[in-house]
Image 1 (spheres, rainbow, N blue to C red):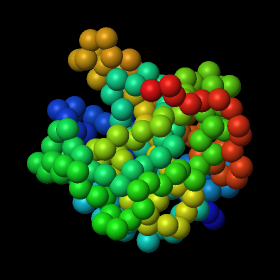
Image 2 (cartoon, rainbow, N blue to C red):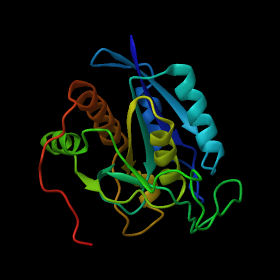
Image 3 (tube, helix red, strand yellow):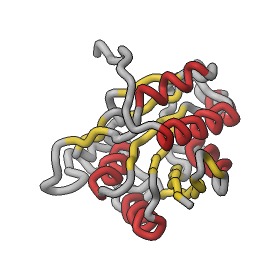
Length: 210
């Protein structure tokens, strides 16, 4: 049976939970479109996150790999289009590292594009009542680090999805948007299904003006 690798992160930045891990672990062991989902948690640490990710990729040899992260402040599920070859941390990671203007992979290309059908996934989510959009930047923290390292490693079709705060997190950040865990889980399940069942993306306007 084909395998799908989903990864989430441990909590960071003073949070007690990370919605990315809470969501992907709910899908661990499920069968979606004829493939078995395996969920793994990554440390929110530069370098160590990629070491663990690469171990899992080499061990599982998945058909599809989707890394998931928290994007506190974003209102919807966001499919990342591109990862850039830069670590530039505004805050320290969970090991106290704060790289500035350092490449993810020395000598690597400037950027990689997601190999997921990102616009088809966005359309599918919206059709099922889940707010979603394409994001043009995965940032320069550990999420971008992992997305770049995932695509640089090669192998499966792969990409990155950001999800919002959970309601209990947003309660501690007045004015911040949130999404219920059940909706995040449903969104990831549908994203996996679309990615497994179609190769070509669709052409819809979902760009950004700034």
